[in-house]
Length: 326
Image (cartoon, rainbow, N blue to C red; front, side):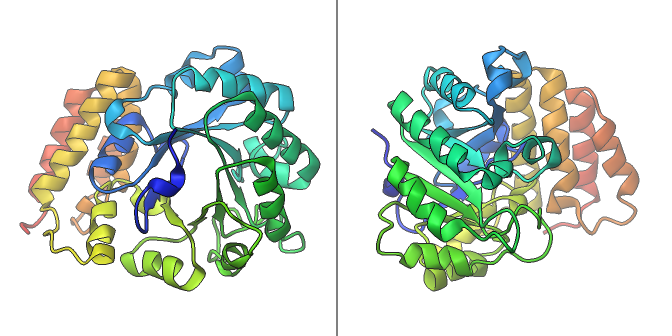
């Protein structure tokens, strides 16, 4: 069975992100150095009801392994049933989302909302661990707010539930994605002699120095990268170059554009043209490849409005020609 602790030295993981970690993006992140990737959030209730858009999130390809499918919900029964459905598509890990802060999730008691009901959070975790044969992991935050920083105690409780790894985002739910992530408590969990599972740190990792600090100063077993990956799956390669002391040259602009167009092709093939274009154009609008182009706003808007794959591809190629040569 897959073990998350076998990901190699100083592993870098792609964070699960709604509308971001689609199949094409995951595939390319793995190619360029991500040790493990995760799907978008899968709503337990929607999966049980066989909602097609939710079922599409379960599409996996062998080249992206190891891959985790992350589920969220607010009842033991729904989470157990969803976990059993997920198990049938054979991911390497089932991850429980106790960290999403957005109102439509946390405000309904799921995701980070679980941090206001720790007994239920633990009941769900224990029940899912017992219900499936796959490794179960958890992603959560420091606590609901600064007055309820529960992570040091919660980490022990979750480990006792039988999870195989814990990812901690260094913010509270109240912070959402504002301010700076606080890694102090993440380091405290890592130093706890009662914790014998891998602890993965998450929050504001955008450079090799950020990743190296997380490993060296806080002692995490792995680093999960989220928003810094938008539109640049090669960020894992760039960070690995520094961590490993390798001398691979950075990708040229033309190579980066080819990667982005490959993402479009994979997403269209796997998700259909409409969904594939929708997913990919978000990455194209966010990619740093086109930053610095004078008067780029009309082109960016055109990317975000494109509805056909050929239309989006033509816009990208025109944008590529607007970038100064490397």
